[in-house]
Length: 132
Image (cartoon, rainbow, N blue to C red; front, side, top):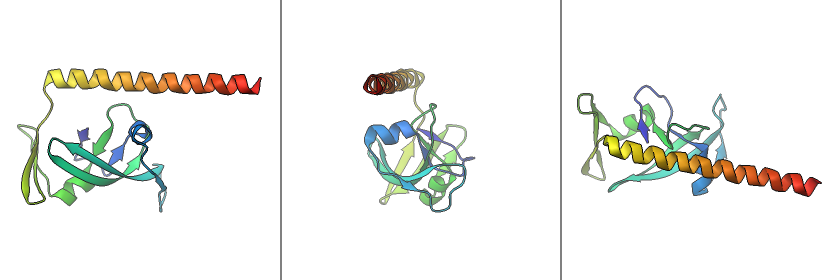
């Protein structure tokens, strides 16, 4: 997950939407992004649901932008890179991953991408065989 105060959208990857089987709806006022989706997520004890635009991306599964930060009244400490806010009347602090956690997360992400690409390749081969 990426929290980006310069992004004006909340965005899950299409891979996340497909993997979790999340329903999507057409955007009521389309612009360059394609679909809208409610995304439920949790970080430790913090659980939330965010309305997001869905896009193909491989940098992470979820990007939380200004809309989420505004709705949650998030305070970002630029020195420690921690995000603090209240959720259900409790203080929540989101801290960055350690370098080891980043590495492990990148391995998982790479494996997920490889698995999806392999499934896609198998589907194309099956479809070719059916045509012939």
